[in-house]
Image (cartoon, rainbow, N blue to C red):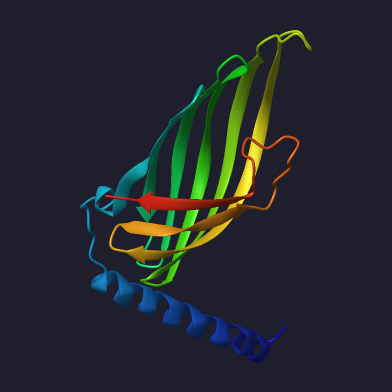
Length: 183
């Protein structure tokens, strides 16, 4: 390779290196390090409480959750779920687990949601004259897709479990209304 061929190869390479290092040096001069932690300013806490009491029936639920607002449109979070259900002389059931939540607000008044929920269901059935007592313990997975109307920190809407199985689901229907509140 003679000198002209080397010069033809290295001139463009040299120009690219100079441009890269000069733009890097200029951008470093404009960069300001912000050591303040804004993480907790974007976190909101909320959840749900539920109590249903009727003739021989009890349903108590506690569902705390927290979300992180990535920006004005997107939020992600986690939730916990604890519940107790009882039907007098029939069964007692404990439910516990967690969920991952994704929220999108395409406009401030509309909130779209996706929630992956994994709960453990432990149910003890009481004996009857027709069957002996037994236990049914299993994991239940739900994937809810929903939409709601949002005003301030409150969203009212409905969600549907796309993995709903009437034979294994914790709930009687895949469709579920909700009220979501975050502070």
